[in-house]
Length: 349
Image 1 (spheres, helix red, strand yellow):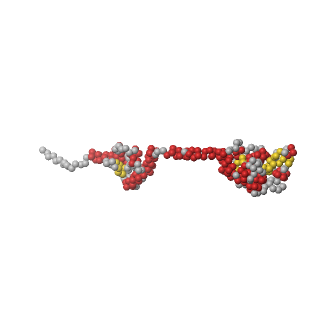
Image 2 (image 1 turned 90 degrees about the horizontal axis):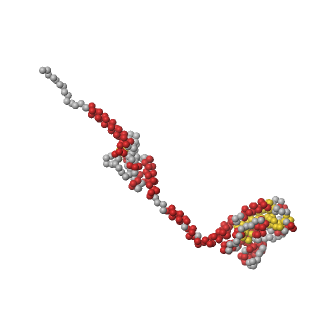
Image 3 (image 1 turned 45 degrees about the vertical axis):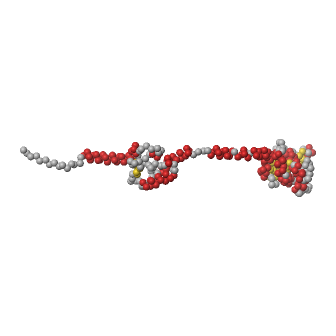
């Protein structure tokens, strides 16, 4: 028999299946890590929680979950931040949001601006639910309530004063004095026509002073009283233009005058009685001048007795500016008392 010699090597070479299995395992591990970085596997393995969806989503970059529920950041080659910096940013977010249910989840990216913006948006969206608005109607009510409390106390007085003498509270801009000078027109010069008008304010400053050309032929200049001469009419303002200028000043103001109805008649104008003050019909002035209350005193005599000043003196005629200033000064002497009287006894228009 021929002998058979078998050369058997009992050392087991690595099986091909094992090598192939190791290669597949490596590929599987690579794919799994890639999926973990992208966050696909973490969503499936994450345990359910009551934290809002915004914070329950795991980090999409560089974090993987552990078995105990904590989170571990996986290092990335291009990432410069560390886990310590991540924990520091999470602590700063915890300090900003004291409400426990708004505490940021540990899956927030370290130093991520987007995460902070989302957190603030979530916090602001919750504010309307917590904030109450009971103070708004109280503020409105507090603004509306004080007027009726203070109103009834002075309702009668304030109503009458605002209607008839309220304008005197703003005297510097709401009160003027007027005086006009007339010439004679018409048959034999018996018709009085406006030839000069002067208006002064509360302090006596001249607001208007113009010579005015009457629409009719002048028969008598009345120079002894009016001070008007023929040369004054050369460049005088036509009556219609002057009248419009004067009425713009008088409208809405308290007008003071002496025998003021004559001035209004020359202007062909009717001023409201509640806004008219005629010093020739104020009994208080006559009383101060030791004259009968029902008497009609001239402007010259009242000025002499109460202001100790001479006006309308000489042969040159009257000055409408001087007369208007004297009228305003006379009215100031009894202004407070007369305005109170008018408030209690308002004149009928």
